Length: 521
Figure (cartoon, rainbow, N blue to C red):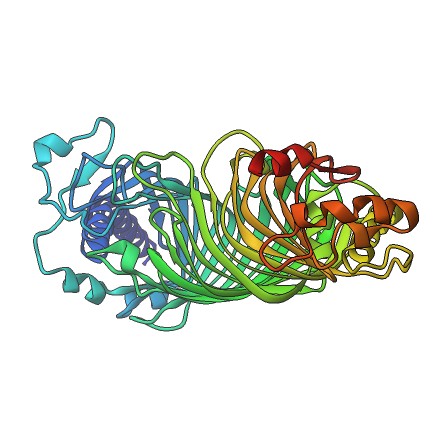
């Protein structure tokens, strides 16, 4: 009896040893061929170690998947090390369920949509130190029938690189700090929870949503949807601006093209040229090309301080550019001038208050200089009910208005002005070719320039006043000037004066160019 039992035991040991020796290579071949079918890729694998009892456990390293067997592009997937765990029964039933897959050193390279060349030969694809099989030539839809389901995937330290269709452009790279995926059913999208670092502006993005099913033929067309939060984005990495941005929103579409909508809040948005922080909030909709990061902004509603305006446009990069160009169209019909001046003017308070309307194109080309030096504007504007915050400047404006009315003894400072015209901004200098400045009793036409950094003003033009020259003063001076009234009377106005405005925004200087009047006559 004992000898029979010993014989049976030895036989079982022999069978177990034989199965163990034979199972490893069979399992390896099955593992590789299944990945081939699932992801339509040539598969290279370093080591693979599998145990079956008491549950299925496998570890492997140096796993590489090349879409369509291509070696003229980065691999679709590279994994430094992986660990697989599954229940014995669930692993051997159909479909096979893998309970948990942990990936280390995961790198994903998504090719552009047109990247679908024929695979190379096995000899071209050979790699030292790793076994491999060429990608199958079967219909790609066969991949959806691969008989295994990943219940949970956990990765830490993943790099996602999206290759643009234009080879002259740099790939878009995302560093994903944490990524967890869960299966809801075979052939269905996986739910995910991810945290990734945004490179510029730096900040942490947290996303939850659904991903898949995997599009084998064109990975960038794999469906994705979900919600995100973006926190503590430091805008000071862009020269010339500062602030801490937060954003919340949702997205849907494909990896290569997503529709995004959400909000942003920057409570301390500022331009270094001005230094005064102003709250900035936006409600936006955008289309994002995941292959290069190019973004098309659909109508964006923005609020700067107490002022609202609409923005459309794009943020993209041409083949000749390494960085993106911002091209926008901004428009508002009822905003506050002081909100915008706080951004661009130094000092304890903005130099003017009033209403503002504008319609302008905005372009910020790439470069290393401050944003304000690269900013290009072309448009029209209007200012209404403007008052100057400097008592001295407001007093001069009020005095001009009273004299223009023919009432030089009036000292009421509560005079408001209106401005309108077109403008062009280049290299920090604002060109004003047709500035109209209107206040009670006077209409002033000016042309010239204004330098944003220094505040230097260089304007000249003509002032048309209701009163004659003699009516703008009193007593003996009025009588003395009366013979000169006809000399300055023009175009239905009591007085037409050539004027020039210089100085700075804080201390403007006004002067009359009487010589131009005499030369004209």
